[in-house]
Image 1 (cartoon, helix red, strand yellow):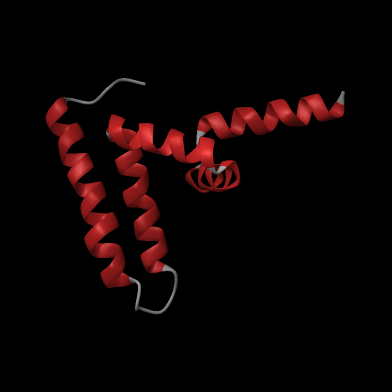
Image 2 (cartoon, rainbow, N blue to C red; image 1 turned 30 degrees about the vertical axis):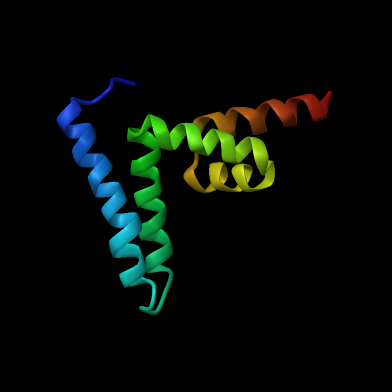
Length: 93
């Protein structure tokens, strides 16, 4: 995967923080899961464009593996898919 231009990366990061911290809380009182979906999209943008956030996420996964696995499943991360496939293959043997 190519790294985006630094200005695009900063714009995506700011958009992610805005979605996660501003829009999601405003949308959460509305009926339906809108706030949760918006927060997830914001979190995806933050994790893809911030080394600091990725580092914190890895530390969270090491401390609370069940929470990390749940978030990986929600974010449909490629590494989580590979781990699940590998675990299924080992369990089948």
